[in-house]
Length: 331
Image (cartoon, rainbow, N blue to C red; front, top):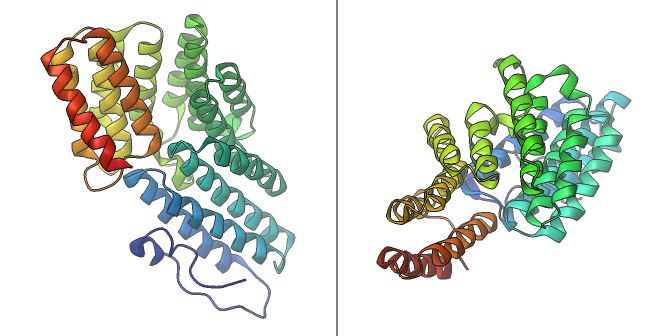
């Protein structure tokens, strides 16, 4: 296999995170595992800032290929399993990038592969990661019952019994699924379970970098989504404000999504001027990079709601011009 740095395709800065490695005659060991895991951290940081895109997806798949190649020369069965785990997480990173870029067919292929590799690794954290992304993909595809099923599959992974933070994430994802199938009671019940579990989670527990996005801020952002979906726009607005106040600056894509959810909640309360002003902030937050496909899709949802609720508003027409201009630049 070509031993050039597999992150070159993503960005020069990301590529620097993983050094060049020549083919080694000796057995593969812990050093190789650590090196490959550092590449995962670099991709996670890139995703948090820019969102999913094709170069990130390609880099992640190259990392998975290298991990699988190295496991053939592993020094022990333990190292083989750790490399399977690394491969599963790289493949899950590629899948998530495709989900965020709204490339659902590719995402589904990657997720199914990642689930197989997580099973080979006997890695329940990777399994939960895959089911979490499966739930989000199902929502994007309009398969709301499958989103609930995927959230419940995440709840059933072994890690949720050991670490309440992962249990909270699984319950939160299930809540979104329930809200989309019209199960208000189920949605609120799952949100309650997510809040209870997160309150028990230790902040200093060692966890992989991909889950760093999840905490009180993300749960508030998910709460806003659920509240809006079940018809509580005022509750969604309040949760969105709290989510934005708590979301770290480095999670630029997540801040933009929370801002858009805030705008949507304001719009659903017929506050058109404020909603359009809030939605404008999304473009400012993501300035300098193309908008990820998922964000563009949500902006399209906001626009459709805007012209439905306020077709004759001067503010709405001005925002439509801004939206079309930004959309054309995102192609």
